[in-house]
Picture (cartoon, rainbow over the protein chains, first blue to last red):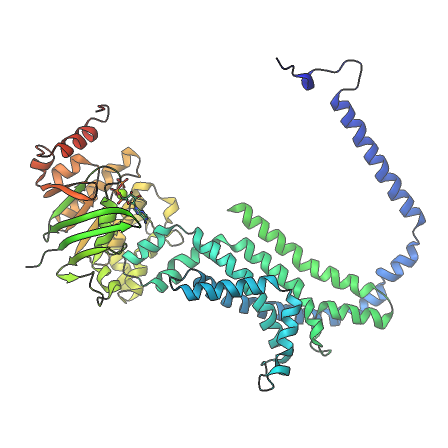
Length: 270
Length: 249
Ligand SMILES: Nc1ncnc2c1ncn2[C@@H]1O[C@H](COP(=O)(O)OP(=O)(O)OP(=O)(O)O)[C@@H](O)[C@H]1O
Ligand SMILES: [Mg+2]
């Protein structure tokens, strides 16, 4: 016979609940001590002057919004459009009844999910070294759209495929039974329903791309092409003050946090 | 005159699983033929071979004299003449009832939007759901969804309607509405091939009842014969099971 030992009140010693309460009290105490020590030891004027310098922030903000944020949005959106279109084509290839299409798509997806986005971006930028006749239109903008788009297309392809497979088979069959050709049924019936299912991961992909657009700085951009991360870094050097980087970080969060929140809301609603 | 449907020597295997083992069956224009038989006997597969949702392994299928199993036939065009109603309704969940009925007319038959809507409303009236035009499928009961699915198929002006257990997924109190619509359709002269477990419907509406078992047609004749007076032992034992569900043999 086994005794339910744990459930018995332990006379003499402390009950588990009491122990828990004491442990939590100790944790709060440690936290308070650390906060107080940091607050007392920190050189607040120096910190504020370095990281939250109002003067520097004021110098930074106008160009940050008119140039850097604008470019970040351009890099992100163009790459997302490329990724979306190519990703959808890849997803349809993955589901094709023609085996070579499936293989080609599978290999592409494996390669571009396995490579760092930076490496892809640098390879795209160095293509003209190998093929001088090959000039990617749009300069840095074209290279960014292509490179970041190629990477996100691999992720989006898997997302789309999952969405399409989550639409019940009967939807395609009903559409076909009404005389719709396969592609017509895909476009009018299956894909619209698949997209609804994958809105949360699609939003996440947009957030990833928004952050990864900072990699464009490795392409060697002019002052007019600069995006948030490089801009923040450059201005920080100019002023010899890290405040611009803080402002830049805050700008990223200004967009990524609402997007993430939106994505979780939509996920919860489904 | 052509048969509405003619099936000759139809075989269908899934891998090594032989599901249809040589089906010969024809339906005349205006006839209602009910297919009955135990679960797994291949009734759905037979129906799905008629509009080539499944590719037959061998054999021929003709609809209105056109061989659908011919390599050269435009299968999308051929399917337009064959309406299909599924057990699970399969309404397009992202579209309103009206759009469910107009989308194939518009995209496939290239009808103009106003004409599509006129035809859609006419067919909604036939199934008694005019007031649901702007609802979404999820807002309808199962019986209402199935009637919309019937209207959707009818809007394509099919010469033949296939029904695969159209009432099996419905709560008992909703079955009647769907059967009423089907009965009316039969009276209007629609050619219908119906897989069903509704024996009363088969007895009353069908011109012929086909009993299938193990991938073969066991018995084919008027309901007065196949249901009331079956010749084959297999038919008799199936009927005794479905007509007296409490009786176990
Ligand atoms: N797509 C498929 N792939 C593999 N096997 C299948 C497929 N469709 C049907 N089958 C098999 O074919 C056999 C007959 O199935 P079918 O659905 O035609 O039977 P049924 O008479 O309609 O049964 P029920 O009354 O349960 O609907 C079953 O053994 C089933 O497993
Ligand atoms: Mg079935």
